[in-house]
Length: 343
Image (cartoon, rainbow, N blue to C red; front, side, top):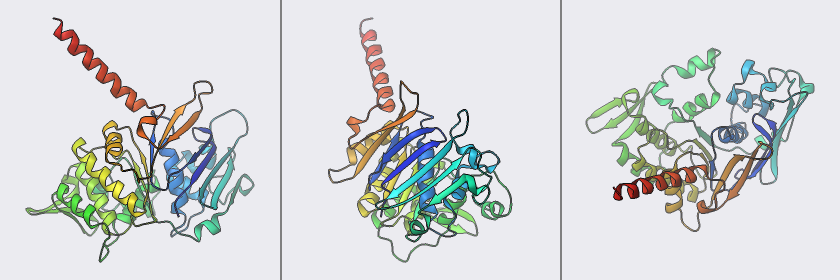
């Protein structure tokens, strides 16, 4: 059962936004500051509360956003006077939502008069396996992090700890994604092993600790781990923030090909990207039966509030700041070439 929609009102940068999701791949594009990562974090939090330790929805939002003083009211959109944020996520007929004001307490159980939730018990009764891959790598810094995070007040979003929990899971006896796993092993030049809390890349020449491995290869290694241990199984949801970061462009096709294969097996995927090559790889590798929706987040010229248009074709994305920028580069290159011919 995939996520079907989200509604964000007076929440962080959003005034009033509703987005319907594809059960396949959802691609979020837009300029910096249009809320792509925030939207994915909310959707991820809605998934994460369905698995142990089953935190309350507002508490999970606090842990994943880490607002100043860990206060819910700091997630309410900045404006004068009293305001109430509304966050709601659907999956078919089920929904979970939370309302809180800009005078809410520090935690979900403080200032209950200012925080209300509903639907979470039924929502939590139907677990969703999910994983959130942030922009920054954590595997090289994994040793000791989980115990430190559990015992100390660290200003780290909980998505990093959640990801390590999933990365440390032992492999399945058999995985359905054997082709994707083999493809990753080919481009990594080996496999990933865990000794204690340290990740290593095992190659023919020996083992190399992850802190000495290129970040792009570490990113492929993380995807390999999530496939091997069954985190990304049919019915699960993957959130990946800027998958193109640290990857050589020649590896974009490898990553996109694997994501398309996962979508075909029943994994719902959310990507936030600024990468033209990643977008074009998705466009060119996608097949007619693939379920891909592009969500373009932008600021309305009249209101300056964040709005969204959703299209099923790359060519129909509007506005498309990424495509416009590369078209401009191409035009400038042609102009320079023509000017050179005239000399």
